[in-house]
Amino acid sequence: MVSTAHAVGRQQPVAVIGMGCAFPGARGPEQLWELLRDGVDALGEQRKERFSTDTLNDSDADGRGTAARDRGGFLDRVDEFDADFFEIGPDEAARIDPQQRILLMTAWEALEDAGQPLEGLAGSRTAVFVGQMHADYWEAQLRQGTDTLDLDAFTGSHQRSLASGRLSYAFDLRGPSVTVDTAQASSLVAVHLACQSLRGGESALALAGGVNLILGPHQELMLSRAGVLAPDGRCKFGDEDADGFVRSEGAGVVVLKLLDRALADGDRIRAVLLGSAVGNDGRSKPGLTAPSVTGQRTAMRWAYESAGVLPGEVDYVEAHGTGTGIDAVELAALGEVLSEGRPSGRPCLVGSVKTNIGHTEAAAGIAGLIKTVLCLEHSQVPPSLHHRRPSTRVDWNGLPLVVPVRLQPLPERGRPTVAGVNGQSISGANVHLVLRQSDPDPIAYRPPAGPGRPQLLTFTARSPQGLDELAVAYQAYLAPHGAGRAFELPDICHSAAARRTHHGSRLAVMGESHDALARSLQDYLSGRADDAKVAVAHDIPAGERHLVAPVLSVRPSAWAGLLHSVTPDGLPAGVSWTQLCEPTGRYVPVPLSPWQPGSFWLTAGPAARSCPGSV
Image (cartoon, rainbow, N blue to C red; front, side, top):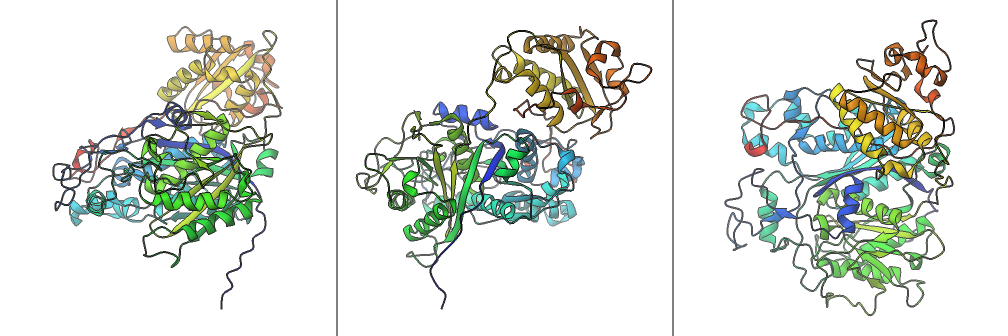
C-alpha cells in the first residue's frame, strides 16, 4: 500500500533574473506590459498565408472538414530568423521548425535581459527546460513528399528533443537539456523542473520556457469539432458567456538562479520563486480529459507548503483561465485553497492573460508567469478582458476571488506581494508556482548634481549594420525620455561593457552625461563623429574582452586618462573593457542586440528563402 501522506520541506527561493518573450502584439516583456496595462485584445484574423482556410471557416462547426473559427493570436513574420547570428546555413535553417528558431532568439533575449554574457556561460552547468506540444512543421514537410526529407528535417522538426538541445548546442550549455510535453501545462512544468535542478545542485543557471506556433489545419479541425473553440474568437475568463478558448502563438523564456547566488553575483532580481508543485488528477474525475477540483487543489496546497506561504496571504493568482467550462472547476479549487486563513474582506485578485493574447498552449504557462512577474514589478494588475457578467457556475459570494476589469494597484500589505500561477492540461497534469516581489533595490538612483567625470560607453554587434542599429537604440535609450534616464551613467556603462556578450563590431563613446553620450551617438550615426569621443572597429575576434589596438586607433591620446596602461605608441595594451567601468557598478537593463533576419521556409527544393505561403 502506498501512503497518501505528503510532506515536503521548504524549498530554496529561486530568482527570476531575466525574461524574453514573443506574443501576439508584443515582442519583449516591456511591450507585453504595455499591451496588458492598456487592456488590448491582441487576437486577430486567421493568417491565410499559413495554410488554406477556404475549407476551415464555416458557420456550421459540425460540417466535415470545416472549422467555425476565423480569429486567433498570431505572431508576425514567423518565417524570419537570424541564421547568420547562430551560424546556421540557409538550407538547414529552412528545415528547422520555426518553434526552435523563435526559441533561439527569445532565449538569447532573455540571457541579455539577465546580463549573462555567453563567454561566462559556455561550458557551464546551465540547464535548459522547454515545453513544446506540436510538430506542424514536420507534418508540412511530410506533405511535400518523403523524397525531400533529410537529416536536417529530422533534427529540425521531427525530434522535439531538439527544442531544448538546440539551445544547449547554440550556447554551449552543459547542464540538463530536456523538452517537456505535458500538453498545456508544459512550460510551467519546465519551470518547476528547472527550479528543482537548481535546488539539487545539478545546474547553476537555468533557462525555462515554452513555445507554440500554429502552422497546420488539423488542430483547428479537431478542436472545432469538439466544440471547445470560442465562435467569436474571444477568451472570456470567468464570464457567463464563456464558450471556448482561442488558439494562439507565442514563446517565452525565463532565466533562473538560486536567490542567494543571484544576490552575490549582482544580478537584477525581477521576482522570486518561493516554491512549486506538479501533480496529476489520477482518477479523481469522471473522465480522462475532464478537469478535477481535487487534483488542482492538491497541487496548489503542495506548492504553498513547499513555499512556506499561507494560502490566505496570496494577493494575486494568474489562472489557467481558458474561458471554457473548466474555469468553474479551477475557480472552485482556487477559492477553497485561498480561503484558508484569509481574513474577511480581503479577496484575492485572479486574472488570465489568455483574454489578451489567447491560449498559447505549450507556452500558456510561461505567458502567465511573465505577466505575473510584470504585475509584481509594477505593483499593478491589468484587467481581464471580456468579463462583463460573472459566471453563474461560480459561487462568487462564497469564494474570496475577484476578477479585475480595470487596471488596479496590488494591495499594500506592508510586505512583498505574494502571487500564484496556476496551470493544468488535458493530460491531467496540474502545476502551481508561488512567487513574491523582489526586495527593494538597495541602491537608490541619485541624479548627479552636475557633469561628472567622463564615462566610456562600449557596445558590440555581430556586423557593422547591427552596430549602427544598436547605436540608434542606445541613442533613444539615453534621450531625455528614454528608459536609460532611470539609471546612473556609470551603471549603464558597466552593464554595457561587463554584462553583454562581445562581438566583432565595436563602438566606444565617451561623455560625461546622458545627453553628451546621446549627442556623440547622433554624430556617429550622421557621419560627423568627433574622433576624440568616438572610436569604432570591426572584425575583432568574437568573445575577445579587451580593447585591442584597432578600437582606439583614432586619436588615442584623448582616451589615455581612462586607460590603466598604454603602449609606447599610445595604444591600449590589452586593457579589459571592465577595467574602464566603475568597479562597483551594478547591472541595469540596457538595449538588446538587434536581429538581422532573413526569410526561411519550405519550398519544393532543398533550399528555402520564400514566404510562408507554401506550407
